[in-house]
Structures are given as C-alpha cells and as structure tokens.
Length: 604
Image (cartoon, rainbow, N blue to C red):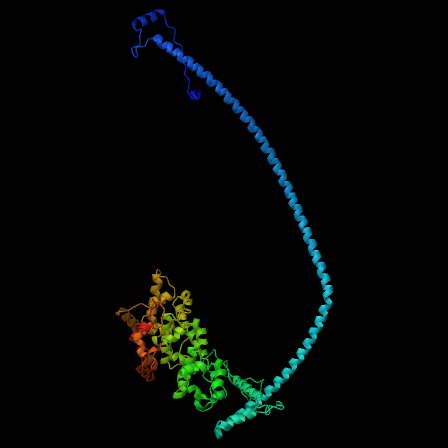
C-alpha cells in the first residue's frame, strides 16, 4: 500500500523561515520578485511547500498509528510466547516424572524375572532329584548287567590269548619245517616235492587242528590252506626293518637290520620265498605274490594269485594284460612292474634297483622337493624308475614347474655319475673355505641353506625350502646364476648391495671355470633367462608325428628326463676327471631334439 511504501522513509520537515526585516523584504521583492531558475514566484513555491507539509504531516500521523498497532501485536506475541514457555516447562517436568516411574517399573520387572528364574531352577532341581530317585534302581540293574558282560568278555579274551599262544607255537614249528623242506628242494630239485611237503605241513592234520570228517582236499580245507599261506607271506614281508630270526625266542632281541628312514633297504635279513635261485619264469604263484608285496604292489596280490600260474605269466604279459587281468590302472605301477620284469628277463641287475620307494621320498627331501613325496610314494617310484623317469612321468606326478624339472634332471645325473650311491648327497656342512665345485655338485638342499647362513644370509635361507635348489642344479644348469638364486630367496631388486654380496659369494662357490661357462652361455644366441614361474606342458602330437609313434615306442630313451649318453657312461666307468662336464647345456628347453623342445618348454 502507499502507506507501507512511506513507512521507512525518513521525514524531514522544513525549518520555519527566518523573521526578516520589512525594509529588507521590500528591497528583495523589488529586486527579484521571480525565481530565475524555474520562473516561479516565491509565493507559489511557498503555497506548494505548504501543501507538501500537510501531506507529510498526514503521512506521519498514519505511520504513527501503524507503529502503535505493530507494538500492540508484538506485546501480544511476547505474552503468548511466555505462555508457551510455561507449558513447555510443565511438559518437561511431566516427562521426567514418567521416566522415573518407568525406571522403577523396569527395576521391579528385573527383580521379578530373577525370582522366576530362581523358582525354575529350584523346580528343575526337584525334578532331577525325583528322577534320580526313580532311576537309581535302573542304573544299579544296568551296572550289574555290564559287570556280567565284562566277566564274559574277559573270559573270552583269556581263551583267545591261549589260542594265540598255541598258534604261535604251531607257526614257529611250521617255519622250521618250511626251512627244512627248502633245504631238501635245493638238494633234490623239482618244486613238486616242495608243494607236496608244504601242503602236508600246512594241512589241518599236521598243524594239530581237528579236521573232523572233512577231506584234506575239500574246499574249506583248501581255503584254510591258502589263508595260512597268505599269513605266511605277510609275516615274511616287512617294510620297517628286520624280523626276528626263527631260532630266536619271542622275548629275545637282536641288534642290526635296516631302517627305512635311515638308509635304503638294500637287503633283508633271513630267507624269503623270493630268495630261491629258481628262474623267475618258474616261480610259483605264492612266490610271485610275495615278490609283489615286497615291491610295494601288494594291492594287486589277490588278482595276481588268481591269474598268474607262474612267473612266466607276468614275463609274457603285455601292458594291456597287466591292466586287464591284474587291474593295474596306474601307469607308474605298470612301469615299475615292467622294468622289474625286464631285469628278470635280461638277467641284468642295475645298481638303481637296490633303492626302493622309501629311499626316493628321502631323496626328494635332499633335493629340496618334499612337496611331491606323497605323489611319488603313491606311484611307488623307486630307484630304477628314477633312472628311467620321463617328462610325462613327472607331469603325471603333478610336477609342472620347469625349475623343478631341471632340479630332478640334475639330481638324476648326479646319481648316474655316482653309480646310484644312496649316500652321495652331502647333508652336513664342512669347511666353507675349502669347497670345490666337485663337492658343491653333491650338496643337498639343506647343505645349500647352511652355506647361505655362513655367508650372512641366514634370514633368507628358509625360502629355499621346496624350491628344488641343490648343488647339482647350481653347478650343472648353465642358466642358474646369482640372479635366479636371488629371486628364489625373495631378495628385492632394490637391495642392490645385498644382491651384489650374494653374487660375489655365488661366483666364489661355483668356481672360475663354471662361472666362465655360465657367462658364455648367457652371451650365446637364443639365450632365455631361467624363469622361476614357467610351467612345463606335455608334448602335443600332430598328424605328421603318428608315423613315427611306433618307432618312438621302441626306443624311448629320447623321452627320458636325464638320458646318459654311451660316451658319458664310459667316461664315468673309466673315472674321468670331470664326470659332470658332459651335462653342460642339456637344459630341457634348449635340447637339440626338436621334439624335446615341443615337449618341454615355458607355458604360454
């Protein structure tokens, strides 16, 4: 509204004109009766100003009335605000009272709950007492029944102990008779007398068991005969040391024998069924089964007992026959059996055949690959299989790392050079200042870790566990250098001084000649650094390779992971000065055979 527009405009009233002298007014009027600016007389201007004054006075009065009205409204609002403050205070007081009352109710509720729980516990205790009183009689009856059962079991155990002692005496007597029969066979020949004597000695009549009305050749009697033979074979076989000799009493103790965890089991004390000097082709089924058990293939004994009429059955069997008739689906088990049968047929005994699969698990510890012990043990990999191990065999054993393949290859070569001496790897530290490459090549993984401790790198030594690093890999693999060792030890690249310290000691360890050969190999064309993460992939046969498949099956020496050339064998037998020199450059991905390059190489 117009009044509101003039509300905030400051009003300035003109000051009253000054009182002038009449003579001055007359002179002034005479001189200039009109204003030179707007040609307006002072009388007209005075009239106009008077009108403005009256309008301003009216506006001031209106504004004054509005101010008074607004003041009254403000006073009303202040009074209502005070009333609301009083109401808020009263409401807060009521809320506080409600909270106090609620807290008191919660406290009373908790007290009541405690009382209820106490009453429940008391009720449960009373029920338990009542049940205990009711079941005490039943428990007493059950206890009496259990005591009676225990007395019966004790009497049965005593009877079984007596029978056990009786059977032990009979078994001992049977062993003595068996020994005499074998001696008679040696002197008179032919296994017919052995079978007849064995049948007569192991029959129920000779063992003191009442046969009743049954005939000695009845099916039940025959079953007992085979059961005793099987028991005889199990008792004759052992894999954890020596057995007590027949001429010792049960309580006597004889020192000696072999331990499976201390050294390879090269022989067994006492005579076994396989100790006869009979050709393998003429072995009886019992002898074949006993030999399978001694070889660690006891899971195939039952099927072999029904299928193999003699040792000749196994000698003339094909791999398909072994898989079909004996259920040998594991290719490593078939290979183990075929290599052993080949040695029987060729009548050649290799030094590696004296190392069993228990020794191989310890050998894996020595070369720094203990993570594969379970796979090798399940495959029954022995020393003979190590000698003829192929890349596909390692892949079947789940060894896929290229570095681990090289580790196994170098370790097998060390065994070749040392004529499969089971103790050729050195485990204990010697004089660190008098080491030569010929000694370092026989260091085990633990011995390399001891060397790291001697050169002030003890904190990194545990990183070599499971790495496959041993002395043979360090010396024989031309691509294995200090940088490879630093990566395996997890030494960061930014620690240049530490890596330089390792390189200096590594060069001193391998010697000047091996250092020069490694340097020349690095400078050769087509050199690729040794990767610690590369994988080995199996060889893929194309259509052009099927024509040569039969030829390769006839001669699988090229597939061996560590083939030993004839010249190398002759050099080793003649005691060459550098038995490890012929191994230089035989890295799997750098072999000269193109098929080998396809079979072994970094996984893309």
